Length: 162
Image 1: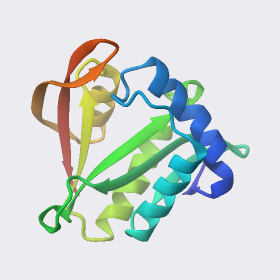
Image 2 (image 1 turned 135 degrees about the vertical axis):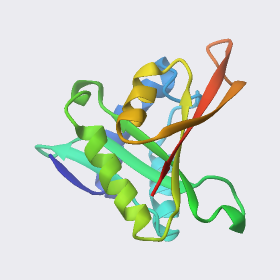
Image 3 (image 1 turned 180 degrees about the horizontal axis):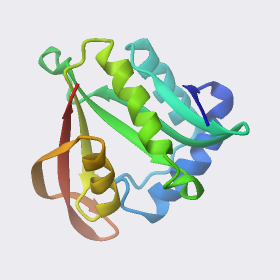
Image 4 (image 1 turned 180 degrees about the vertical axis):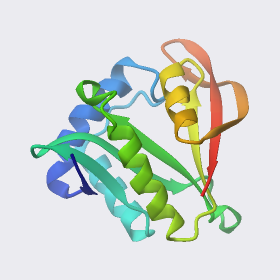
């Protein structure tokens, strides 16, 4: 497995991984599928801020990605980041997420970031267990702040000190 910064040539494969989760799952509360432009803009904006957008690949096929950005707007939050991580269904359980998160957290730490945050659907038990296994701690549960598939869903906030 290779992990490297995303290239614009990866965008279609990133869409192929991300959009089924957006459309069919509670991995994200977002219900609008990503376009090429959305992902290109996301990569560019994060890179300009000194944050990176990483992809994991196997035999030139993207099998996962991770990126991060400031937890909330404003200078007072500049040392606290929230990440996004998505691994293709066929690559789950193969260590892709763990490797991506290790590189992502090391990158953030090298930029003096204090903490990495995860906002996880309370119904996504697999993601909560994944984050706990890589030293994230549950710090809050926000009741019914997410909405998808005609239901309100709790959000679990998890934090890892870097």
